[in-house]
Image (cartoon, rainbow, N blue to C red):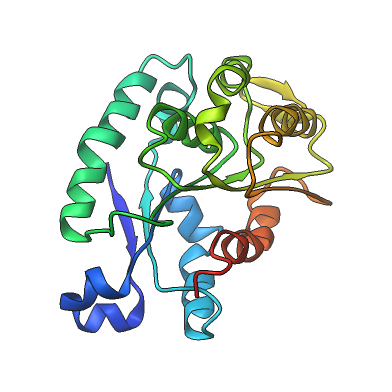
Amino acid sequence: MDLRLFIPADVEVSLKNVEKDVKNIVYTQDGQYFFMYGRIATIAAKGIAAGELPPFYIVGVDVDLAKRRAWYHPEGPENEAYLAFFLEELLPAVEKLFPLPEHGLRRLLAGDSLGGTVSYQLALTRPDLFQGLIGLSTLFTDHLLEMLATKGQSLRHLKLFQYVGREEQAVETPLGTIDFLSQHRASRAILEPYLTRGHFVEKNGTHTWGAWQNILPEALHTIFQDTV
């Protein structure tokens, strides 16, 4: 499995300052697409240079498209193995190189569509590890909605930015036609009573990287608000 890494420019010069200067890592599913189509590294670099965002790392976890459903879907045959890999192997390996502080907003997840699904799974499985989540047009399966209904209170500490496009009411996917807008609203009804730092955003947009790239600056600025 390939990883993509964004390191803030000033930290690139002097890694001895890692622990002091950089307090956050954003882990993205569909890593190659967040970097290529979402332009998340460019957005982060501009925000950091302008003093609008704190220095933070981005770790993009590339996906094998042939295994995307197997890894990311709660009913996928390799979903449990992917969760275990992410929590037990990936995080310790990355954070051995780039240590994080013990407290505060330090470890965040980001995912689009089915990548949002597995991001929520990770946050629900280990709520003690993750303090923030960016969900872009998340696929809320019945299984995930049930998890939110039974375990949602464990996320009350979470800083959340959840986005959906208003034109996502009948999206053709390999899993069939999906109403992402209704799913977004159903999850919001479950989560909003618990979350004091939840941002649920609906805007004109389709189920595409064009829409997600446009919303990413707002998502990052919202998540990192009051941390600069």
